[in-house]
Image (cartoon, rainbow, N blue to C red; front, side):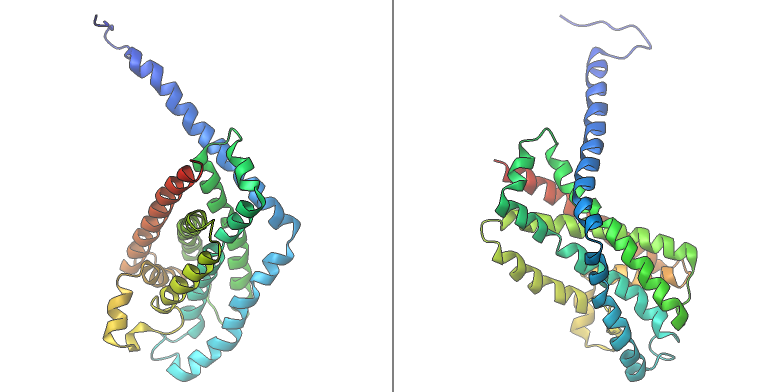
Length: 279
């Protein structure tokens, strides 16, 4: 028997499903916020961890930066200002190292049984991964602000609008990398040592082939070819353009595309793996 509807009115199926869709979306947002706040509490209770995380990028800036300028010549290879070339790359490095290790926290929860207790709560499964990934944005933003403030007295020029767009780009990249890290931790949870094996095997080639530390233009052809399939290389180029104040540079579009693809791929894969972990 068919169901008749009057002109201008919604069908019964639309009336029945649209509130459910809205409720599911609002529930996901609410659950994601709960997970994000839960993950942030240990960070806020132990601010020393944030201070300690600044040691590595500051060491690179203090020791590698002057060496880079002296060996390559800031005026020729690095565009005239070593800090304008190097500081954005260090911000990408901080994002890479900070988010790529976040899966270790999830491994600890697997070992203690805390994650299993989270699975039996009414929280949606995707929120467990998305909330964890979004949590990384807060410490990363704090680190970036401190690093920029430290380098301004040394000649780093701040272009406010470009810096804001650059930080937003790093946030998108960080979400994707954090989701991939949590997905890896979920997959190897029964052999947790594999997390660090894969982490160390992948992270350093990504870093070197992105041109963070040395310009790839001076490297061999095979390295330049390998860099073309490294999404991090596009983000590094975009960050340098943005922090130089050039928001319309072609590299910016390439960086956003690489970051968005990383975020989308990481979230899709991470949610799928998280759902299967409870089976």
